[in-house]
Figure 1 (cartoon, helix red, strand yellow):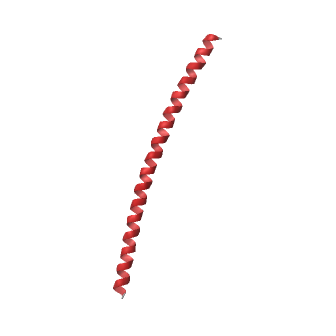
Figure 2: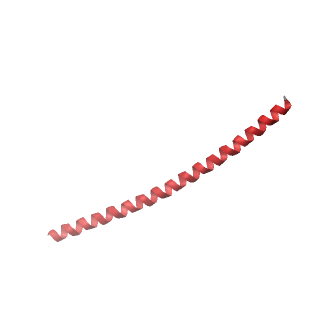
Length: 63
């Protein structure tokens, strides 16, 4: 009977390890997507900042 419990425990341990590995992979993929999104937003903000500087410069020449 103890062998059955040991086998069940081993199966649970393996299942937990597999689930942990899957969670880590999902987290890594999600983290990568978030970092890509942040980089994209930073680039977008930089472009908008450049546009704003050009508009300010054009207005300064008009005034």
